[in-house]
Length: 474
Image (cartoon, rainbow, N blue to C red; front, top):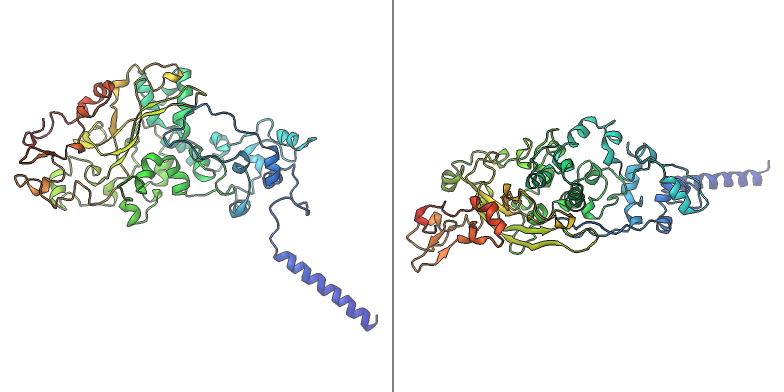
């Protein structure tokens, strides 16, 4: 071999080596292309091909229920909800879950065949295909997560026992894990189409947006061990938790636990509490794993005169909550009607009343929130009135997530009338020298009711006749 031939051969080898190095440094595409890495008749090949998903998607069926407590969910197109894309998808691909293979969780058929793209899709989704595997958590998740699945299956998050108990009690069949299935089929259908829009599956905390947030993959199918506070938690807990915690109500500010400590939901609500302890609770305040203020704030009994006097009389929120979100008289729409909702729209207010759950919470008085259920809430589903509606009040015990130290009831820096102690000026009902009444708006009186059924169900929890005589208000 002459010098020229040797030089030429070495040049070719060098160029090939450099080309190989450059190719190694490039990130392979995650969508099908000329390299043929992902065939479109495979699960992954289809769901990473955005244009193909748009071409074969099935439109959503018409809604048969209401919007739920949080209002209308944001809309994501069906193809956007199932597209595998972004860094989340790459993370998922390299994870334990990503290496299981699509059909191990979703069933169906990989490498499906068909004459058209639509036919291939129909074949892939045929048989025992499951769009949301964690709906069947016992079969699909428990083999790896047996303890969590066993506990979560009976949890408030998955089952919504508190809401279900309220329906079964007011229908007149009592409370218990077996009672909901004893309701008339039309009432169960109404509940599932409206109230059950939030109580969901493992995936709605760890993989997808909750149904109330539009549904669909949240992060390219990545499994997030810790739910995102905004994308998951307050998507469902929006009108109560998120609205208050982020200070979104007019005239309110964010909760001090957010502004001063930067707490997310999981800083107070432990994983074990969210997953449950395996026991049935017909009310969330009975959960033994729930957080309590004293978990962090100990030794408060005598920290100031207010606490010394009232520590065992009121729940903490009575003094330290701001105005919070209420709504009432929810009127569930007829299936397919497209109308309905709360006849008393959401509004901010603050009410102190007699504690309706003294067997669970030891206080004499507490913050109360207007409940959304009315006797005829389910008439659109064939139940004209709830026969035992008055067994529970139309105002319920509440613990708003909008805590601040100094509220309208803890700032006593101005005198309404010098005949009353300064410490009482901000929250006691006071008549000044001219006979004007102050602070009455904080308390729940029967005169606050706008519907007769509110009185019959709740009058025992109003403060009428139960305030100190020196307040001159009874």
